[in-house]
Image (cartoon, rainbow, N blue to C red):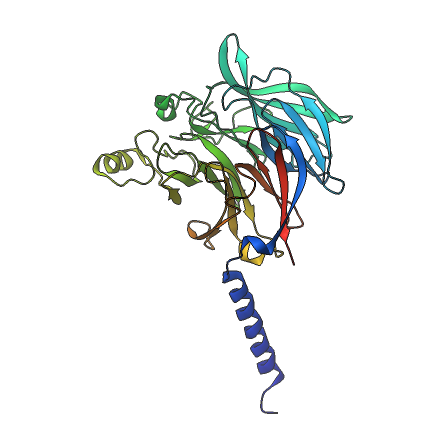
Length: 365
């Protein structure tokens, strides 16, 4: 035989790999996706979480927590948090479910409330039981809040630590003050105690110098956050322990003499990507499912002002964004939260204020 069986096998393997690589490199268009309205008539849904019960759990800023049954599109209201104070951008914000939900049915939420006349943010753990939530336990309190710049996303890491993003509460000086919980990424144990390996003893602060981070996702041990800039420089940041992210002394990259001096003196981490004009970066998730191969190893970001979904392709090490592609820029309006289901379908929520929706995205073919 002119070619051995091994040679033929290697040849066809090479062709298959080349075809797959080419397929992953060709950007998709909006027309190649199917979109389905899963829920309508909502008011500022802020967080979507794919639950271990195969339902979508979501919050609304007014204080409501609900579940959406994907198969039937039925929405069941579970609970309304009684002391939520929704004003401006504040209210009920992020949510996370315990990874071992079947045996530890805990729901973690972060929200704004009126504490003795002072607008404040806190993190509370509820227990899910008999189709409702009960037994609230305050894990972290006295986080400064305001009508704007409250954050706040929650994320539970594989080692069972709770990460919390907070805004600067419209007081820029707080972001650089490590004694304040505002303008930070915080890290606590799931019972509210402070991990022994946090940067400072008895402090929840993990990183600082943040303006208003509203997206948070962990990929292979790396933590990424999306952050609102002022009139320039919305950001995607790789969050590292005890790093300074610059705000308000640095906006975006360290790209002038004053910023360079501050960055050098204060161990400032610069963004992986920025946007000017700003697009109002919001929810952030990670996609690595074979049903949309072009999106594998990508961060998916939804935006408010630009009203689009952005695919951000990571390098193999996860240390850089190597390509980006925009989707659904004029469809459905402002987009706030996003999550990925185990079957590779993507869900995002709108944030238009009236008749908000949860939308399912899948490949049309």
